Amino acid sequence: MSRTDKWVASILALGIAGLLLGVLAFAAVSRIPVAHIYVNAAGARNIIVAGHRAVAAPDWPGAYRVTPRFTNPAFWSDATLYFRQGTVVTIPRQDIKLWVYRG
Image 1 (cartoon, rainbow, N blue to C red):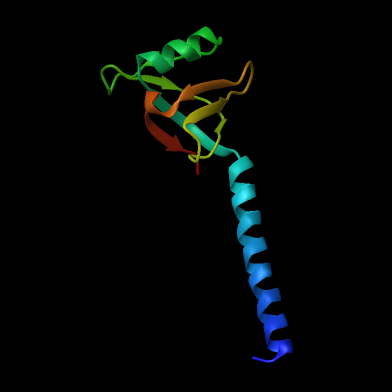
Image 2 (cartoon, rainbow, N blue to C red; image 1 turned 180 degrees about the horizontal axis):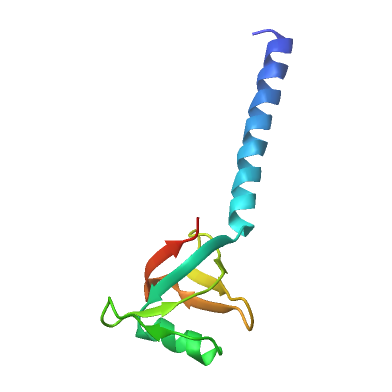
């Protein structure tokens, strides 16, 4: 390869790597819209202590339905729930039984 070819290849490789890192960084800080989620008793207890509502799910014994507006992506071991009003709640992902996304 000539010096020009190596330069073009390195610029393309750096551009692709930068683009992938940018997409990963955006995905790490974005918020995912959620219609509602189902949590177990431990997750419901954490949400109720934070001042939000968790209602027993009629169609799933032992589960509680919670309606946050947004959540963080699934990269992390904890789920951060953003509600319309009040505090943000962080619970372990193992406490969440089902996600129902908006859209």
